[in-house]
Length: 156
Image (cartoon, rainbow, N blue to C red; front, side):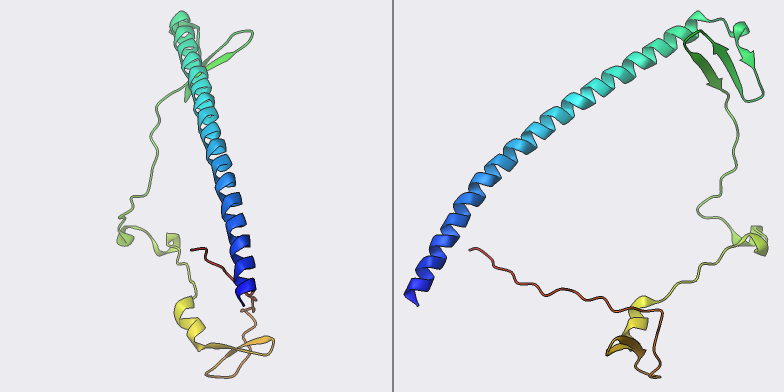
């Protein structure tokens, strides 16, 4: 028995050393990812700021009278760009705390769903079927999923 414990301890120590080494590598990689993510975000921010600056410069350069007007927007086309200014519009939105009494019944939707917590209490597995324990009938709407066995070792 002592020999088995010695071999097990050797393998556990070998694992701990490998784990420590890999965790150092993981931490270095995470630091590199964070560094490059920050760089990417900085580059994206630079692009956005430059784009916004260009947009403002172009808008200021072109007189409002040169824009083509429609009911909802005005636009101006250059050889390499199209500037579109969308006008403010009003939209109807439903309040979260709406009053059902103000809305006709035909516009109210009711979603039905299964009370799974209570329903599964009356179900049981019989062979390859799910049955209702109270009536004995097979419930075809339910299926059996097999959760694989699991073994764990906690290193202390």
